[in-house]
Image (cartoon, rainbow, N blue to C red; front, top):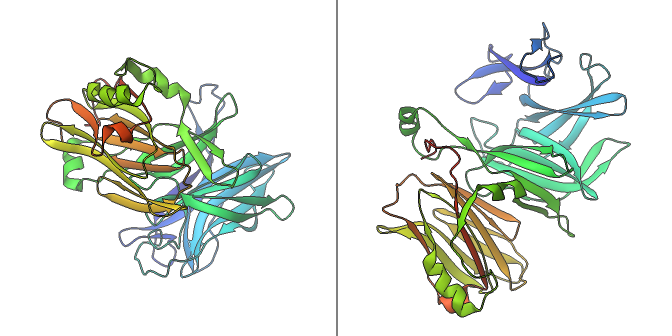
Length: 382
């Protein structure tokens, strides 16, 4: 296992300078002969030092892959006033590394910031993998998790980006993927706190993991996602008695039967309306809402609680919304492309009811809803 080690250093030796810390980052090795990976032995010295470049904006979060007899290592990095990048190294034994070149590079946003991650001068948590007929690069910068898809040149060992987007427009960061037993590419992400530090310090915990999402590529190279099918095992009961494609009049009535208890539920619905608002509310008023409006044939605007984003959006007249609630977390994915994860710390006053602020007869073309089992019995995330 390769990991980033840090120690306090003089400013001229530091690679992590964010206005609070001056750390020098190196890449370290640990090995294990334990089949359950419960015990590890650290190599007695770093296996990779950072480049000697005064413009270096960071050197962390290793990404390891094996191709034939060679190991390839990507490290999140960047250059001040130039942009983030992933540095590529090669080794045969995981101990002696040869620097090759940047696997991929980005551009500085032009915004001045004490922390180079916030200005796009440093990329954190890189990931790189084949998906369909393309390759995908993931990284975190400027407070967001970003994806790019394109071509990887196997001879030059360089990634050429063709399309890009945001993995999640809300509270979602530090993404990482893995392959499951069926060969599916599974995305994991960290949901940070959006409440003041004094509040989560008093609570004694901070942050949680998002639900796993299965990644795929659309025909145009856009990154698509949906929750892993294993998440269905959390369903406790269905609120909808008839099938999801019942007559519209029955669907509108069924929406009134949705009463989510214990802040834990799932709702999947489709609409053909080009402008609509859907709300989860308690006796005190709205708790979560999504407002959706087509702006053109190629763009739509979403507002999910306090988060607004205008995104590329194909007008196919059939829009799918899928939301999961668990404690203070609400994860929404629309049309398998656009995700919005928000934190809501207000305890509901009674069960959450689901409604459309528009005519329910035209708002829904299908509807399914479930009460879910919570992630933990003590509801730590509330």
